[in-house]
Image (cartoon, rainbow, N blue to C red; front, top):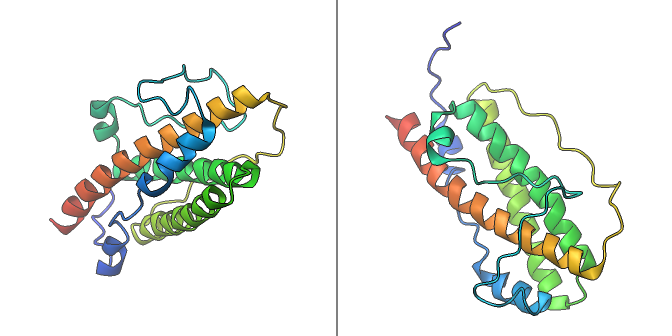
Length: 177
């Protein structure tokens, strides 16, 4: 069935501007994790399985661009739902008050971004994806495993923010054109 082209309200398009950035607290977070995490060239292998089921933003660009708008928005919604819960968990478990405050402030921005994505999907007539799985059943991890997980949460979050900023700009051009 062919869907008629829906033009979103201009207010829905402004939700696609992308003010979120990890820059304000990335250095603090890596310093908090300590060596070897704060070393410039450090790159631990991505864990095969993590309790957070982190979505990877490493999908090849041509595959990503080949997806329909609804699929890309749904992937963004899912990714940020999982990442928001993960960043909240990082904030809960950090002992550094300044980093905790920065992480919680960033969570507020992520929560707003999720609301904007939901509003845009609704405006475009797309179904919202089901809520992400709960994080209650977390296995016990040693300190190093927790640090690796925190490192990957921040790395994936940074990748998703870059991808989403580019993707939302493309989507904005498509919807206006």
